Length: 179
Image (cartoon, rainbow, N blue to C red):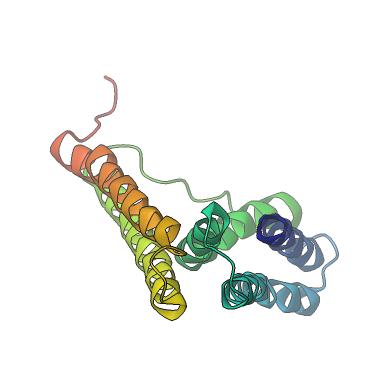
């Protein structure tokens, strides 16, 4: 059941985001657009409540509970920049706005960009791990929450791989334009 809520929340996120931007630009209703965009974080609240209720009712934590925490963490960390990214493209396409800003491709500017993105991933990791750890403590049964502890380990490994593969690599071996 929780998997259906996660899928519904992901669909709801995109529906509210696109509806807000369509209202803002093609329909020229900026207040409607703003109201719809303000509702986007409510999707996260629905997912948080659904996961908490499921665990409080005695469910054994499984992959969907971990996925819910990851979704929430990374939504907090990347949600604003994703909305801004989409807004720039809508403004350019439908309202004659400037071309979207592209990330730097070379040198130290690229390395700084990668560090910034990894910093957002670190925030997403911290939020997701805090939610997972809170669920482990609240449930209070190591057997029922073993999967959540596994998610914390997996997320940590993924974050470390991201650290080495992108920001550290770009800092040590910055890309240079082809001559």
